[in-house]
Length: 49
Image (cartoon, rainbow, N blue to C red; front, side):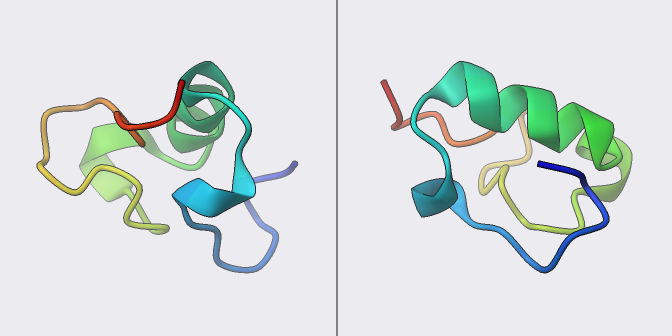
């Protein structure tokens, strides 16, 4: 997945590792355009396996 594609949420990823890679490619904690880091700790989609 490319970060420039339409909005994503945690349900679009199979694992937290996949979501984290996307999160960082999309701008990471400084931007988080897809709002994948709900608690602003720099870790995306923490509830995924």
